Amino acid sequence: MTDQDNGKWMLELANNVLERIARSEPLQETLTHVVVELEALNPDMVCSILLLDEAGTHLGLGAGPSVPKAFSQAIDGVAIGPGVGSCGTAAFTGQEVSVVDISSDPLWKDYAALALENGLQACWSSPLLSSARRVLGTFAVYYRTPRTATKSEREQIASVTNLVAIAIERDRESASLAASLAELKRWYEATLGRESRVLELKKEVNALLARLGESPRYLNAGDDEGSATPKSDHLSIAAIVRADGRDSRGEA
Image (cartoon, rainbow, N blue to C red):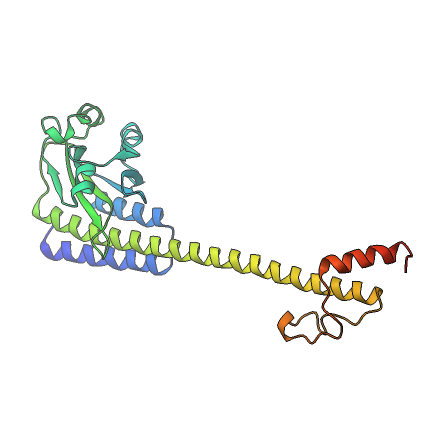
C-alpha cells in the first residue's frame, strides 16, 4: 500500500467512525467495525480491543471477532501490571509494548503457551488514552509469525488507536450523563412523591378540623404551611386525631 492509499484509507475510516459516534451507535459495533476494517486491510493481523474497568485494575474484552475464543476467554478480566503480556503491561505503563516473538519474551511467560497454541506469535499493544491521558484500555495487533509492525502498519495502528479512544471516551461520557439524568429523575420523582403526601396530609387535617367544626388549618391545601393564614388556634396532629377519635364515638 502506498502512502497515498494509506492516507486515504485512514481518512475514510476516521469519517466513518466519527459518523457512528455522532449517531450514538453502540460502542461494541463501532469497535468491531474498526477491527474488521484493519484486519481486512492486513490479512496477517488479528486485532483485539480490551477495555479497562472503572477501578483501573482489570481488562475486559471490547471487540475481537477474529481472536480465538479460547484465548479471548483466558485473557478476559486479566489484571494489569508489569509483565502481564503486551496488553496488561501497556495498560499498566501507558506506553506502547511491542513483542516480536511471544515464545521468548519475558512479558509473555505466563501466557506464551496459550498464545502459541492459538497461532499468535507476536503482539503490538497500544494504550487507549483519554483526552486527559487516562488509560481507557488497549488496542492489540497480533501476528501469526514472529515480527514487528511495518511503518505503514504503525501509522494505521496510531490512527485507529486515536479513533477508538475517542469512541470509548464519548461513550463513557454519554453513559455518565445518562446515569446522572436517571439519578436526577429518581430524586425528582421521590421528592414529588413527598410533596404529594404533604398535600394529602394538609387535606386530611382540614377534613378533620371540619368534622370538629373548626376552620381549615390550610386555606389552600396546595399552599406551603408558611404562606397559609390559619383561622383557628394551632392544633397538633396528635390533638386533632384524639379529638376526631372522640367525635367518631359520639362524645361531646
